[in-house]
Amino acid sequence: MAHEKYCAVIEALHECMVACNHCYNACLEEEDVKMMANCIRLDRECADICAFLEQALVRGTPFAAELAAVCAKICEACGNECNKHVHEHCKKCAEACFKCADACRILA
Image 1 (cartoon, rainbow, N blue to C red):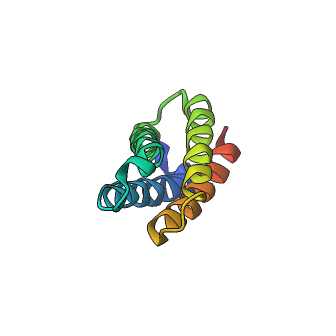
Image 2: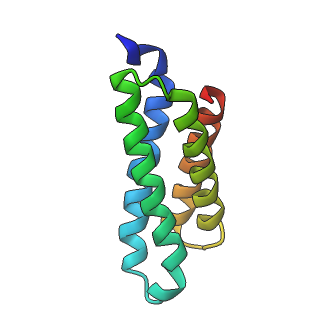
């Protein structure tokens, strides 16, 4: 199966997608939601690209390297934004984003 060679990347993508979705939802519950706007936006972007790339790798996409390069860039941006905040959900999200960015860079 095509996706077997991507197991580590698929796992990192899935963990990042889950962390970003959790962070997104938790940010919406913060007292100053307006201050979290960029974090919320990047959480959505990152969760969406991670979910898409995960599915594409399972399907055996011929665009794995190109998509992984874009995903790494978005994960890095999301991780950097999350690191600006003190919330535990942001810190955990940043960690997952950086791990995923590293895995995607290797694939790219």
